Image (tube, rainbow, N blue to C red):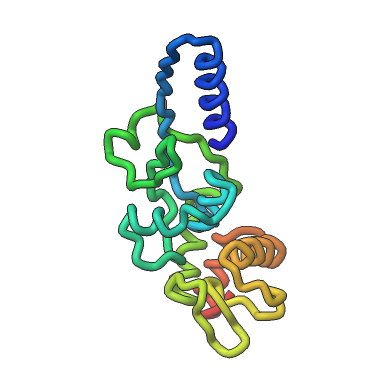
Length: 180
């Protein structure tokens, strides 16, 4: 966005230097972003602003009460100016503004992951139970002192992949044993 603004300023100054009246029209390229498994508000802010500056406005504009809790499939409108608001139904179904996101898990794995998180911590990244911490109630040793949401997601995915092969298999184990 900074680069685009610099180009606008350069074009305006260049035209002014030549004594030419400059008018520019810039089309907004709004984007509908669909929340994927593993996304966090800070991660989405990083994708669009390269920093965490959008986290508060993202939560406020989308009526998100708990900044550590967003849902897979939730659609957010990210305006060309960086403002993020809840996508309307019309915007969400417009192919020109939708984003294609790839995910390494199937929808059944996404559902199993969400199910486990709900059972383990109620979906809270700050839940604590003795030596276990976070959304997936991982051992503090696994988290290596980094309790951020992004690290919890990364470590949980690694743990499940190495131990069970998939979130669906981890859920099956949990159902049989009451833990994963």
